[in-house]
Image (cartoon, rainbow, N blue to C red):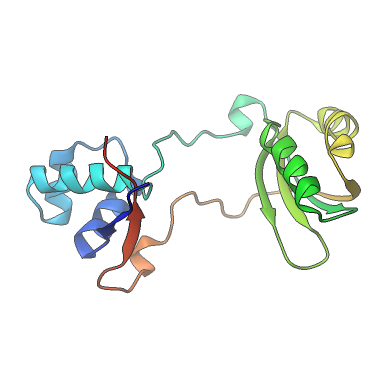
Length: 173
């Protein structure tokens, strides 16, 4: 893979901020908001997509309005941490649609999962049919979310204080 780099300067960061705020904006609207003309703005967006800085576009959906009323945080421990065991566990997690987030963490748990299901009966079924049968799982501690105080998918782009950073970019097609 030929690796170039992409410059994330103040304009690029502003573009990212605008896309996170509303990805349905036209290039014209974004270019006006960031102080660039449309063509360089469009080129920066395409370059950031090619470099993997922008991984995709999606809609933010209210989970409860689609029937996913129970959110659980599950702390999971594995019996062994061999490369093959970890790989099998992570592949199984990736294949489970109810698991919407999985992080490997320090502290008492090896992994912290966010699980979304319809109700407690479905969570119990998920535990027995999926989570307890994942490769190497020895311990699961669940916490049910009572109320979500904050949930942001946008990154705090405005907090990034650097004039420019290079990000690896793959070969163009």
